[in-house]
Image (cartoon, rainbow, N blue to C red; front, side, top):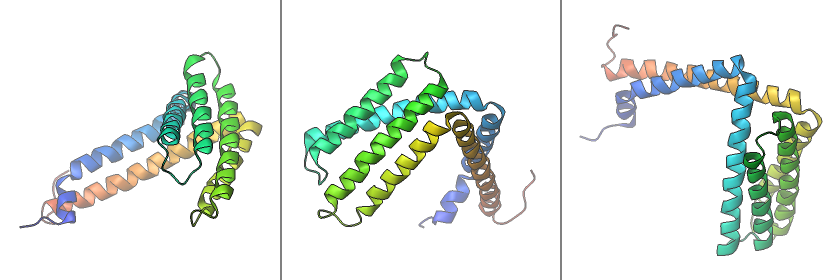
Amino acid sequence: MKATLLHQLAQSWGWILLRGILAILFGFMAFAWPLITLQVLVILYGAYVFIDGVSAVIAAIAGGTVVPRWWLAMIGAFGIIAGLAVFFWPGITALVLLIFIGVTSIVRGIFEIIGAIALRKEISNEWMLALSGVASVGFGVIMVLFPGSGAIAMVWVIAVYAVAFGLLLTGLALRLRKHAHGGRPQPA
C-alpha cells in the first residue's frame, strides 16, 4: 500500500510543530535582541558572500557556462574579498559592515546588470538577471544611505516573517496531528 503525501506529512506532524515553535521563538528573540540578531546576520552574510564568491570562481575556472568567465571571476573575487573582510576585521562595527554590505550589493548589482546585457542574445529571460541586479543596487543604496534604520528594519522584517511562518507551520502541524489520528480529537 502506497502512502499518500498527506499521510506521510501527518506522520511527521511533531517535527513540523517543532519547526513552527522554533521559528516563533527565533522571531521573538529577533524582536527582543535586534542588535545581536543583526550581528549574527552580518556574520552569516559574510559566510554567504564568501561561499558564493568561491562558487563563482570555480565556475569561471571550469568554464562551460553561457556566462562570460571574466564576469564570473570578477563577481567571485569581489565576493571572496567581501567575505574575508567580514571575518578578518571583526572589530568593525555592524554599522560599517552594513555600509560595506550596501556597497557590495551595489557593485554586485551593477555586474549583474552588465551580465544580463551581455547575455541578452545568448539566453531568454535575461531580464530576470537584470531585475535582480536592479534589486541589488536598490537594496545597496538604501543600506548605504540609511544603514542603522535599514538594519533594524531588516531584522524586524525577518522577525515578522519568522513568527508568521512559525504560526502557519504550527497550525498545519495541529491539523496534520488530527489527520494522523484518523480525525479523532486527541488530548492536548
